[in-house]
Image: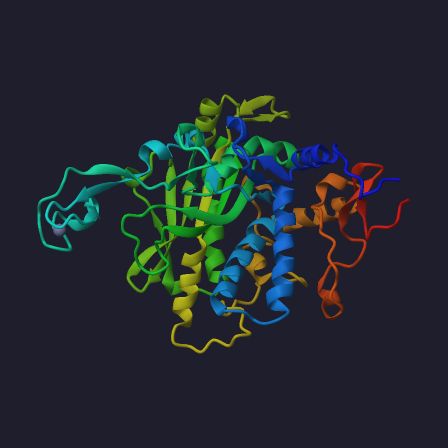
Length: 455
Ligand SMILES: [Zn+2]
């Protein structure tokens, strides 16, 4: 019999090993040798972390009061995204990577070199401006005399640990995407996915914008909802078009009027260096049409860059075809506060009852069936086939649930055991459904149902 009161020197190692093997927690920037004391939460870990945070939120906010409207509305936007993009799909898993990263990651991604805006100083009033925004005239004093323009990197640079110097330099991530690329092999191995599959993440990113503007549209600290969808190169175009349609429909399903949404495809000469095609979902903001979300075909740029810089091959070996390839990436990248702003504009001037979920009225689902989210069905998840003649995700998700009901401990996310509030019992999973880690003879094991005394 094991005694939880007795210190077990091996236990921490066991926890760490289990976390890595099952896809709970990875060392951050592992392919670059890791970044000390910084960790990324893998497909199972991100679910567990969400459960912890949701349980806290439920008990501390939702069951006590309705809380300020803004934070609830933002949560609803992010939860709607997560539900559509991760929970209702068999081919997407989640991730929650660290915000701090070592320079090696940003050297490989190209951000150290090219993530810059042209900065000039006014020689008269010493104001600093983005050269491409001022037409050669100082907006403050009207002077036309400026310094030479120089490249200003938009990343926030900081120091990790108590010493200064190159070895301790860290950057706040300017996008969540790189965490999905550096964890590509970790996720591939632990989730047993194969292309086409995606890794999704919601989280804060930071850009030291020279001129933040338009309320919460462009801010130095912002929150992204990004999917990196890895596909066989030959299918990239088809998946690119698939995701444009899916993402456009998602905003309609969120309740945003169709006449305030449009698609804008970037001209070839305007594309970023890595992009083979980019289309924006645009919204009619108070200042005109502007970006709500960008969907890009990034080719194999990211995985190739990180393979080259880290020395770790980021490829997929297709056993059936006996071929090895670097997947292409289709990236739908959305801004949480931009979506919220679109929803807010729709509500401006109208009275918002505190009990309202903070989003515009959702349209009714087009599909049939109980318990389906209007977001999911209306997005064509249940009706449409996937590129490459694959079955619709909802159907496969059902098959996966049936499979999960069998004995496959590693396939089900660990659930946290929660003390149930009697009033809300019905809204929590029934006993015996989840699998829980228990300590048994000094080993961590997964077991079903509430923990029994095993001594
Ligand atoms: Zn000036």
